[in-house]
Image (tube, rainbow, N blue to C red):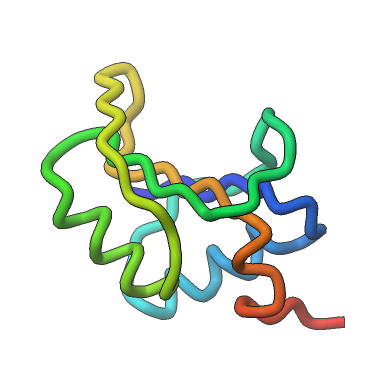
Length: 94
């Protein structure tokens, strides 16, 4: 289970990334806006399990820095924080 948070500053990127990941067979359970400032690089935070699930999400995106960030309080495998590096890679319809 994956959550997608938009930290890119590009409106609609989390929604379109969610659609993209779902087409790739990844279970995205929520999307929204990151609480921090704009990120330049997409981050994939593995919340539970090993890094294999994070690599699968990264492969589907084609970008992102993977790190282990366990959080037993979250019922998620991976948190994706979208960065500016995905602007233009994931197409947002007009």
